[in-house]
Image 1: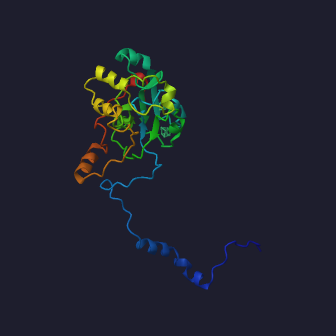
Image 2: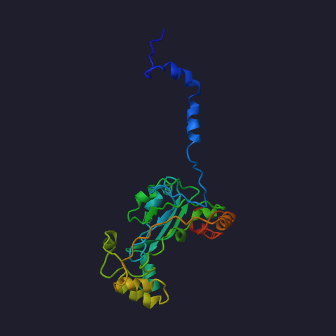
Image 3: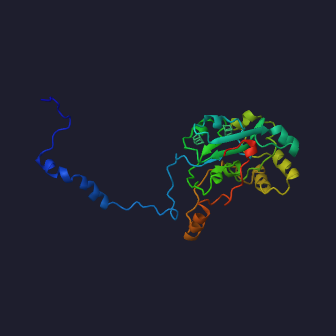
Length: 263
Ligand code: SF4
Ligand code: SF4
């Protein structure tokens, strides 16, 4: 005879009587709870704050890009979902007469995330030395084609914050890339605005940047990603017909296989 003794105390006579139907208690309890069906896409429930959604490439307060094309994110990725090609800011300076894309020597010329491979683990954003790469709460990244699931730099790059200058433009006067990393650059400078006014007089970001420089507007705040507003029935039907994208072209541009990009 076994000397096994269960740790849980044995049920009393009432517990034993209802034991065969105890599971129905859960069902009955659920019947009286409010319904939790989400009317997506007409009502969008924000995910938790730390939800890992679509990636975003960020900028400094003056508008220069934070990505330096170092490829650390690509090397950290366990799913081989990121492809980066860096290039020299010296070439951009020669081309534009002094502008650059990011502070320092290099910038990310090609940046791709393949969302058919990405498992949203977040290792890439941990590896990024400049906090250029973060993840947003955007979960609407389904698409109708394989090529369309490979997001390019223009799909991931945050637009300049209100009051920041679109690039390329020179670094803030008298600063180094270390000053940028340490947060010493808090907005565009008069020299940067003058440079953009001279080289791209039609740039739409000049006026707001001038207001910041002359103290009529506050310094640019980093642009945070926000969930898109709820869709109406008409726009949701249109989006569904296009495959679900709302901010990407219906027919994404073909990749550049000659450059060794993602396939
Ligand atoms: S979240 Fe993970 S799988 Fe996706 S790109 Fe970053 S490291 Fe790769
Ligand atoms: S996103 Fe960050 S880790 Fe990736 S290439 Fe740019 S700077 Fe390097």
